[in-house]
Image 1 (cartoon, rainbow, N blue to C red):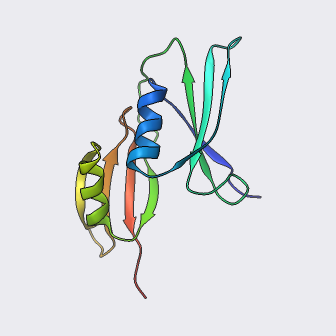
Image 2 (cartoon, rainbow, N blue to C red; image 1 turned 135 degrees about the vertical axis):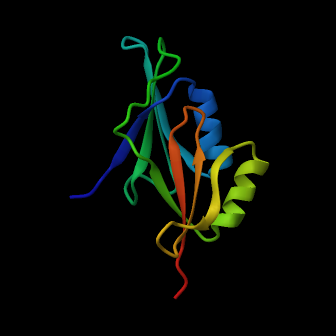
Length: 129
């Protein structure tokens, strides 16, 4: 068994695709409209679906925004350099909500950014051996 994808409901698919592909550097792997159901599914990721876990962005055409609730935490992405990732994110118009630095009670360097729907994405700096 393996995790295939995580689904996020998004209010504006174009903004979300721009963020995940343009700011975070993922690729749009596939996208399909479902006119009878009035929704679109778009799958993005760093690897194809056969080799890695991806994000499914679900856009319900009649729903411009969602209440995120209290149960969801964040998506984590490993980066080579969290400081540089934050600078690139800001340069590309992304929102950094916690600058890169060691996490509380530890030494791992992390940062947090938000996507257009305010979902949190954690950058975790790759440990050097």
